Amino acid sequence: MAKIEIKKTELVWPGKYDDDCTLKEVPRLNLPFQVIERINESRATRESRKNGIQQTFLDIWENKEGETFEKGWRNKLIWGDNLLVMGALLEKFAGKIDLIYIDPPFATGADFSFTTEIGDCGDEVFKEQSIIEEKAYRDTWGQGLSSYLSIMYQRLIVMRNLLSEKGNILIHLDDRVSPYIKIIMDELFGTERFVNEIIWRRVTAHGDRRGCGRIHDVILWFVRTENYFFTQPGQPLRAEYIKTVLP
Image (tube, rainbow, N blue to C red):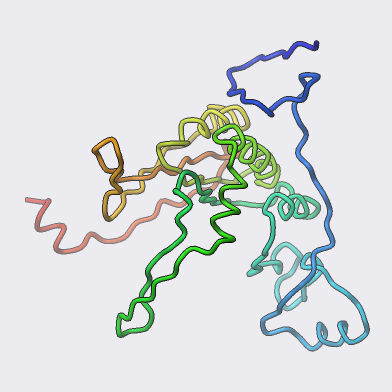
């Protein structure tokens, strides 16, 4: 039996290492993605399709959209498994992404129903969760925390490789999994690349069995290098706030 050589603090769970104690590799497949829909497509794009030229989403770029492929490749909505999509993006975008924000679900109770307002009249529409949504959620994390950590670990490795030297990554989590993901991020990025834990306060508390409601989520903020780019957001204080806080 091989011995795992651990040189720094890390979180270990069933499935992180192979039977020979080597770290499992992240699958990276270069899949032939298909373009389903184009908005405001050009004449050149339509003509190429008539001639039987099949383009992937990585091939679509016109000089009028930007001086380079990287500047012109934007406003793309991609549907699919994010691990496979990011693996395909590595070909042309490794080390070029400045910002990644993710909001992975966990422990939601498989409840994907929600109520939303439509139009200016304030009419509300209630959308119930589908059987597909409920089953997909159970199957994805049916083995509990260890399977969740395995899924996140693979994706965070690819995200790290996509980030540029000035890149930032923000991970939206709740109190049930944020401590574990923080340790994983320390392992992958380094503790010195942790910038802050941002508190995202809820409008209303979510009650639970413990008798106290959850009133906030957290957003872990890590960077690729010390040369990360950040612009401090700011806006004038509201007059009502000034009256209540300032003397």
